[in-house]
Image (cartoon, rainbow, N blue to C red; front, side):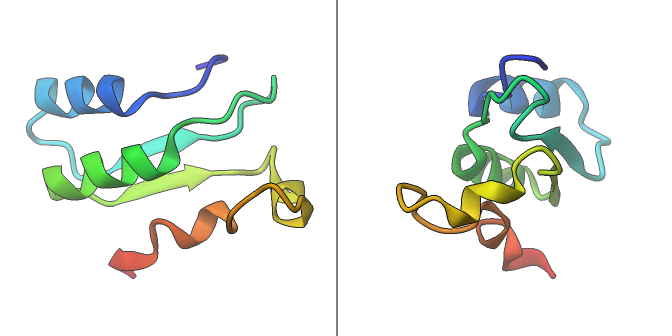
Amino acid sequence: MAHGVTAESLERALAATPGARAAFIVSPTYYGMAADVEGCVAVAHAAGVPLVVDQSWGPHFGFHRSCRRPRCTWARTRC
């Protein structure tokens, strides 16, 4: 968790838990490590579950010019 979640680890976790109804990740972590949120969104959607991202440690990302777009817009396909 301290090093972020990879799409591959989420895929393995969802495969091992066929009854999962949602996936939940924290990105960035308290230590500043950001997950591959786009990759995790793709994996979760392919598995048919919504992805919930707690980004409470990274609201400042939207103010940095090197960030493409706010992280919360990636997963808005399942509102």
